[in-house]
Length: 460
Image (cartoon, rainbow, N blue to C red; front, top):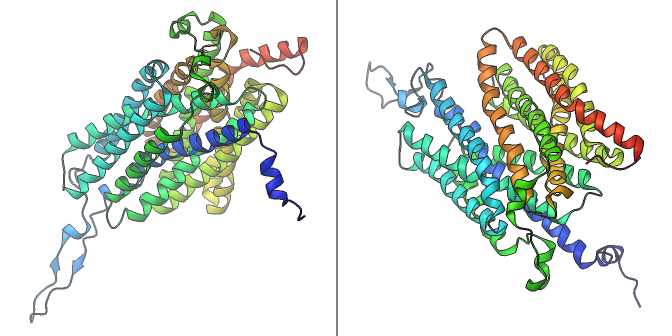
């Protein structure tokens, strides 16, 4: 009898629950990748909405003796209404309309998601997000030049996009326990960077020829993933059992969260405010430093690649040490001199800039990934919630919602300080870094005190 191939033996070693865990991991990864994929086009298409119209192309006309070439400014002009002198404010209005709607909607999304089936809530959010993403692209198809139209689409999309994060984190938290949650969440959280990279590639492919497709294609993708979510997502291991065996705690228990747990959430919320601020401004400062749009896009991708490695590394270390706050604090401590180094080394060419950008992405995204995933899951399944797993949706929404406020404020501060020179922006980044570190010190001390009493046990 022929021996069983090693690959088959490996697959056969997984039991039914492990297969479902792997499936849920992969599915939720792809679902939230599509969310970030659909958000990315706007940053790519901006260069097409407002072009440099100072160099007007000259198109040859049919030869008539002595006739001068005819100017064709429409061949190299911006998309109205972004052709005005205040185009920066108009483009900024679209950014802020999305970010503000996202930040406000996130606080409500967790509460709503806690009371609805995750699968249906996430499906509706993805379908409507696909609709509004496509709607932005249809502005090109139907030659729409109303700023109000684009702002409305951004606000609506920002609101429906809030359905994603609390839902997928709740789902992944239901399936994976605390044992290796840091590593699992570190790997899983790379969907953010993967989505950004894929979104940039798709939008960049169509932006010059038909920027409407830069939105329509990602919109179709996230809508299609919404259908897949409806058909295949399993919210909780209990859903695989007989319906009568399912049990869930009443949602009112969320309001009975222990005071200590609230303070724990709040401390990390304040920390993530500054961490996310660092990420957003650092990406935008790289764009401003290197004026070539394609090169800036490549640098942003490198930041995402460094972020993937940093998120995984933070998860592995926090699992090994059992100290999530300490892991975040060490990475933030290292991030400050790295940010200073990046501000200095960028003048020496692209090579050193690339290397430093990878390191910056890892050190900044590490704490960000750990806080928004593993820490959120730890808090949402804390014993003070008495088994109410759905509270994880609310906890996750509070943390990410506050971080989104940082995402909205960050570019504003960068814009104000950049007028005095980009060195001022980096000084602000380092200040924000140290403030985030300061806010984590209480938890770091608590972790060390706890480990002296119970070595190897993570602080609650």
